[in-house]
Length: 297
Image (tube, rainbow, N blue to C red; front, side):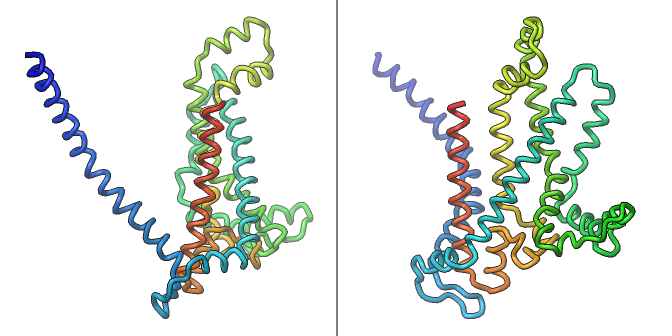
């Protein structure tokens, strides 16, 4: 009798497990076709001599990786790291400061300020790039006109190697700060108010509340925000393509644009795939490090 009952209980459980696999199967299949298959094929191409005009060649082994690492990879990696560090740091400082201001109790016009600050993130990178290309135009741009009123000569914002990267960082900060602001503001709104109120009752100053109450409670949200923004900044391509094309020279060429240049200008798909896979490895390692940091925080 006990054996029959155990068997009867096991059968519905097996049916439930089978139903779960059936419902999950379409998603797994779509992900395999959309994500896994192109990834595996790109890894395969990174070990092949494949130039579009000549077709698939011989097995290259690590030849593509050695070629790209010995070419301009050190320079484009340094540019990518500088761009990522500057953008993420400035955007976080500005976004966290604005989030703290918006989170002040009894702030008049909070919804209006939030709406205005969300406008940049609603714009596509191409539209943002075209807008700032016009504003920073050496002869027709409003920026040179404004600094000319102060007696400063016109600047080649995207044509000067000393100014190009800083100008790209400025455009990126204007466009992407809104996303970090939204995430940090949501974290502040979800944070429990009891610890802050207790700290105020104990006589803690605003700075002490920020450092010893708000910051520790916000650490998980901050880490997730930095992780998402860092990954996006490391893969930066659209603004670079529209604003500078990696120039002047190679002053603003990132890893993603380097892969584009190899694949679609020099038509070397094998080396372009190798660069893309190296970038994937770097992003994965940094993601794992940040996730481990989040768990330890």
